[in-house]
Length: 405
Image 1 (spheres, rainbow, N blue to C red):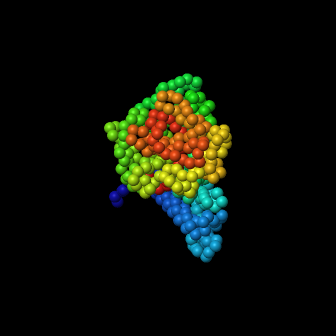
Image 2: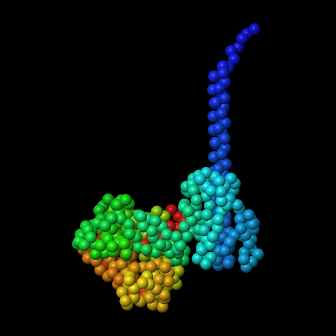
Image 3: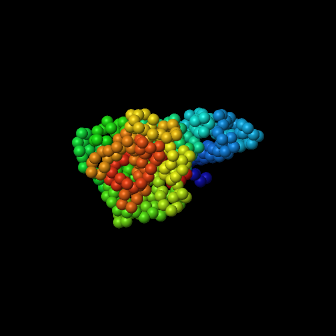
């Protein structure tokens, strides 16, 4: 008889170990596939619910005070069925770092806004793992943020927010960066040409840090824009790429080119409020015009009756005694504009409590277009006067429009 060698005990143990690793790898791969499927299902659920809620809002002019997951979603004043079945969060809900919760829904601002909180166990699409929030503005890659009720932390400071129509705005002037003038001194220092988000350069009114704490900081146009300081000079040509994006090309220096919307020194997910001026200005997206249209004011860029009154802070601390809010209630919008004044390019500070000026991203010939609010007027004006790009003005930011990059 031919004798064939048998497996030794060690060989058997090695074979069993290898088999175990193969099975474990297969199970791990299967778990990942299932986890990915659950996360895709969660994301699809939320998008379908958002679509149904928006249809409901169009018909009812408000969002429903409550919805019941696992039930039919029907109109409050009609028999319209918006979803046959509002989905539950798929199981297992205790998934990765996610708690074992169903989707949650709440309304805010008298039914004019909502939030849906849900969780992804691993990165899905452009979203990271963790708790996420769906709002009328889109799906946020963070826990629920409700504009007008939530604050944002940026640069170690909390900022109030304001929901004004379809726009979410910072309700405070930015105060981020390091002052480049010493307290109590006259300073001719300009920001440098090496823009760095970790070293943003600001001015404080009269070179006093306490002024920045109260009124917000002042920034030159290039610094606001996140551009080298050399971009304070020269002219631009513009190409209207589409409804939302516009490319500005500098006359001599490509380092100064930019495309709107511009994040500039705003937080991630926010951008500088901008204004489009010109022959086709009515067609293109314009943050300031959207704001003014919502406030029912005629004219581009917010010029018109009482818009200044609607956005000016009501406290006499921030405006001279002759503050004029016209036919509106001061600060009825919640924008809370302060009479910040400005720093001139020669180092002088002027017009605190008398006026507020905001750069609008638009480079106007060798200057920049500025919107102005005065204590004595209920209007908002616009012009390139005093708009030299190395003057320093306050900054406001508006939240990006979801789905547009």
